[in-house]
Each structure stands twice: as structure tokens, then as C-alpha cells.
Image (cartoon, rainbow, N blue to C red; front, side, top):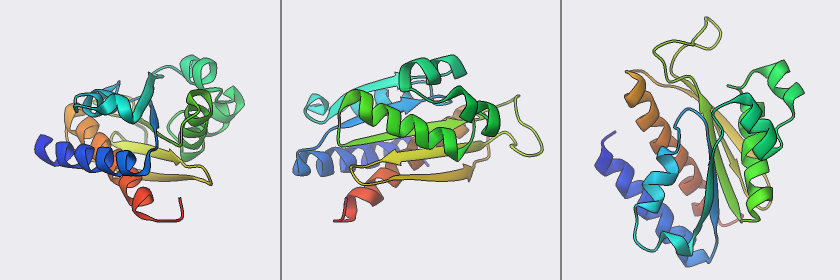
Length: 165
């Protein structure tokens, strides 16, 4: 995945949201604002991008997005349950059509046997559903973060291409 590939995905997402007249919010942990930065680098992004949160700490996830701290305690911050709650919380707080979230372990430390470095959970909240996925990326910290940006955009593009959302 190159920065050009990410740019193509960002432009595709922008086109889809613009055509549909819909807006997006982001909630990021391990990517630290890279998704919002990528999207707002595009001219005209104010027409479809509402806001983004960087909720790196568990407290931020709870305070800013309404993620239940018991959910974090039970499943861990890097889980599909938390990614789902982050996306739903961002969508509700921003009052937008769509929200995406990402929470993961970019490394080089912090991994475990159960959740190794490169484990990243994604959430996408739409008007009708919230979907999640977990991916396992390889590479250094920056590479994991870049792959996470790319996958977060690809996941939302796939949902937008489905006429039922």
C-alpha cells in the first residue's frame, strides 16, 4: 500500500459522500489522526467531513465517545466491541450519516500472544448498522498505521457502494 493508493481511496470516498450528500466523522486510536488528516487534505472536504476524534487513551474513548468502561475492561481497548462502540459514539455525537473507527496495536511494543502487534480493529457505523472487522498487519509502526488508514477507507467505500446503506 502506497501513499498514492491511500490518496485514491480518500478521493473515492470523497466522491461517494459528495454524490450522496452525506457526512462523515472519524474516531481514531492507533492511527492518531492520520485518517482525518488524509481526508481533510482533500480540497472540498468541508462539504462531507464533519469532525474527527483522536481517542488514544481509554479515558478518551469513554469521555469523548461514550464507550462503556466495562466494555473496555471486558474485551480490551483493541477489540471489535470497542471499535463498534467508538464508531457508534462518533456517529451519534457528530450527528452524521457515517462514522468510522480504528483501534489497534501499532507496535513495536504492546502486543500479546492473544493480540500481537499489528492487530487492528475497525468499526463503521451507518444509519442502519454498525459493522466491524479485525485485521493483522505486518511491518513497523508506521506501516501498520498506513495499512490501517487504507483499510478503514476501503471498508467504508465498500459499504457506500452497497445501495442499502
